[in-house]
Amino acid sequence: MNDARYVEHLPIFLEVALQGSFSAAARKLGMVPSSLVRHVDALESALGATVFIRSTRGLMLTDAGEMLQARAATLLADITDIRAELASLSDMPQGTLRISCLPTFGKTYILPLLPTLAERYPQLFVDLDLTERQTDPTQELLDAAIRIGEQKDSGLYASRIATQRWVMCASPDYLVRYGQPADLNALPEHRLIARYHKQQPACWAQILSVPLMSRCSMVLRCDDFTAQHQAALMGMGIAFLPNWVVGPDIQAGRLVQVLEDPRQEQQGIYLLRPVAKMSVRLNLFITLLKQSIGQPPSWE
Image (cartoon, rainbow, N blue to C red; front, side, top):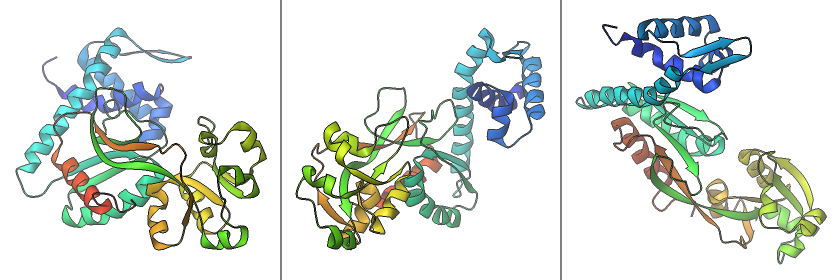
C-alpha cells in the first residue's frame, strides 16, 4: 500500500459497520447497495485485509475490521478538524456541521438558527439528525449531539447549555371549563395529555402512583413533545412537559402552570462532542445557540 487513498472509503465502511448491512447503510446514505459494496471492496483491496465476513445471514466484522472501526472514526475526525482549522485561517468558515438532537428541541431551537448561519457563512452546511435515538458522535462522525440528563463517562466532552425542569400546565380555556387541580390527588377528575413511548414510562408514571394512574383519564397519548404541546394549547387537557417546550407559552399566558413537579427534578441539557478541541464551525454554532436561547434560557 503506497498511499492513503483508502481513507475516502472509510465513511462508507463505518456506516455499513454501524448499520450491520449494506442495504440498511444504503437506505441511510441514499445510495444503492452495490455502490457501497464497491467502496468496501476497494477498501479491502487497498488495505490488503478483509474487514467483513459476508454470508447470507449478514455481515460480521473480522479482527481487522474491528481494529479499523476502532481507529477510523478518530482518524476521520482528525482529518475533519484539519480541514476546519485550515478553513479558519480565512474569515469564512466552511464545511458540514453534523448535529443530532431530539426532534422537538431541534425544530424549536436549532432550525430557527439555520437561516442566520446560512446568511453569515454561506459555505457552511448543516446535517441535522432529529432522532430519539442516543447517537454516538464518535462512531457516527457527528460534530456534536445534544442530550438531556446526566451523562455517564463515555469519552465524550460535554458543554452544559441549559437546565430542563418538568412543568404541569394547561390552557386558560381548559382551566375555565374544568377548574385547576388542587393537588396530584385531584388529577383523576381531569383530562391528561400523556407521553407514549414503548421503551420509556409515560410522563405521568414518573410522579403518580399506580392506583392514582389507573383512575386518571388520558385524553391523548403521544410520543411527540410537539404534538402534546399543541394539544395543551388547544385546551385538550393538562400536559406534563419540559420547561423548554412550554416555558415561552407560560410566559406569554397561552399556558398556565397548574402544579409543581413533586420531584423538583432538574436535568442538564448538554452538547456532547467527540474531541476535546471545539472546531470553528461548532464553536460558531454553540455560541449562536446560547445567544438564541439566552443565558439563563428565555424559557426559565
